[in-house]
Length: 145
Image (cartoon, rainbow, N blue to C red; front, top):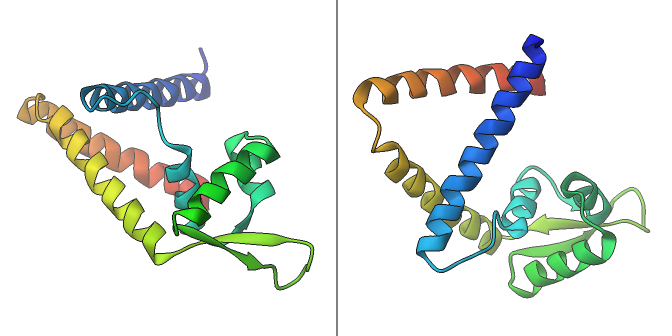
């Protein structure tokens, strides 16, 4: 097996583990849905306002589905529409302060859930995990440049 295939497999496995951890926490709270697409949309909007078509492409969602998701975020005051400065036909979606507050609250909850899951590990495993994640983050940033 090639190194790149091993890396891809391990990253997919890691994502799966995070989904399992998330689903465990959701089940304890009586929730059944996996990662909330609204959370993913708002995360994308933290960087810049985006057209719905671009967000749909990134999330592999249909235009009608994106319209419903964005409509809900707008109704909740977490996002708003803004005209595109270069093309009048394009409408972008931007995050609001309420959306930013929602994201921060969700991130605090996620961090607490992760801390709870990690607390079962011994000190040595926690140190190895911390160092490994630091390395993964450092390398992933290089790929994003």
